[in-house]
Amino acid sequence: MKSRLSELAASQMSPEQQRVLDAILSGPRGNLDGPFLAWIHSPGLADHAQALGAYCRYHTSMPLRLSELAILVTAAWWQSQAEWQIHEPIARQAGIADPVIDALCLGTTPEFERADEQLVYQIGCTLYQTRRIDDALYLRAVAEFGEPALVELVGIFGYYALVAMTLNVFEVRRDGTAPLPFEEPA
Image 1 (cartoon, rainbow, N blue to C red):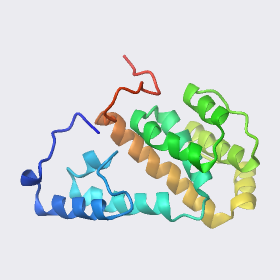
Image 2 (cartoon, helix red, strand yellow; image 1 turned 90 degrees about the vertical axis):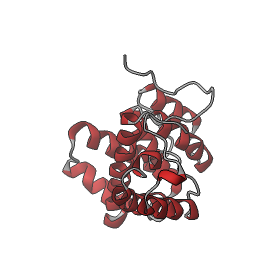
Image 3 (cartoon, rainbow, N blue to C red; image 1 turned 30 degrees about the vertical axis):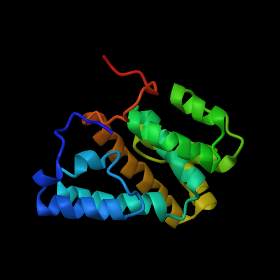
Image 4 (tube, one colour; image 1 turned 45 degrees about the vertical axis):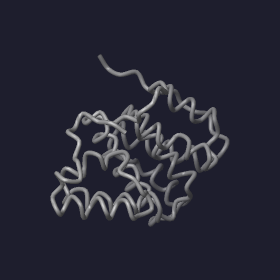
């Protein structure tokens, strides 16, 4: 991965940066991809964001399919190139249908075959567009997922919005020749 940030060589890292790097490399991610290229510049932020991200990605009660859908909704909303490139194949593998993924990437409303996916999409879009969830949508979400899982779902949306903003500001990109999923603003 590359970014507009200055590259940190091991010899330039502070002991705190090295500690954070070691923690990230020894964890389930095993690499410094994505926002960690930026966050390593601020070890305090990296520590806390890394812990929240590990929880949101690996330990919530939301099924992987729905977590990855929430991440793609977020990546599409923020038009976050690297976030989409990293999570789109994971979402496919987790069972999100190709037409749903294609519609999200194009910015059109997907046609869902699964009611739980439609609900995650509606929660995410409503939250991003209105910054709130009305009573009817809230009650549907609680009935479908339960309060603890809904709290976790909101955490997933929030964490991956932070990731998307980080990736966009610092222009974190995957190396390679694959076309970007979203048109870059002029």
